[in-house]
Image (cartoon, rainbow, N blue to C red; front, side, top):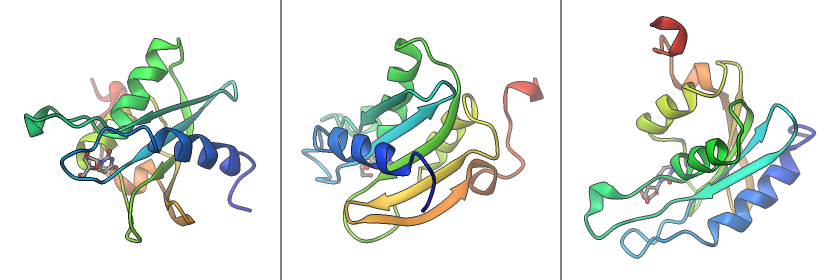
Length: 133
Ligand code: THU
């Protein structure tokens, strides 16, 4: 077993991934967060004809997290497309850093299932976060 909550997070990420707006890359991504009170918040990527205005799934999920009144992420599932590892981009690692501790596990998956788990600290060493100010 990967974790107690993995299956639930995986299902929510898979569901929201289907809603991704990806006419340019065709690369659907779904992200689901477990909050400290055991709620699940999810989001998908939203692309734009002006490509740089596109938004990653993790960024969408963070918007939903804050909109729903939560602040703390304790576990993450990201589901990409295809068979290769879909790891959060550099910008999203930093976005996660604002709301997740360095020991938070990030489970990187494809639609078939789990591929790899890394902590946020492993993905973002020597990071700059709120306590560095
Ligand atoms: N993407 C995400 O949403 N999250 C990731 O972790 C990696 C990449 C999106 C951005 C873009 O819409 C598409 O995947 C292809 O890069």
